[in-house]
Length: 68
Image (cartoon, rainbow, N blue to C red; front, side, top):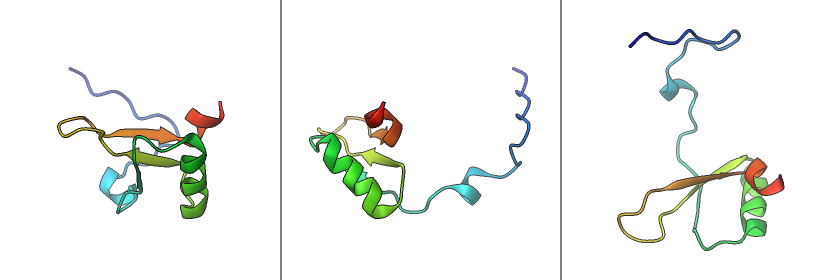
């Protein structure tokens, strides 16, 4: 399988060099208002959603998911 070309303006860096260390999580039963408040308080635009039950996958919610 060929490697896709890098888009213009994307720097060739490793993800580990640009990722946020330590993720900010929220419970899956939290409200959208709680999520927005937590994003605002912590200065992030997305949160990792904790699994509801053991064995479930983690999720992610972004400000855009809620606002739009």
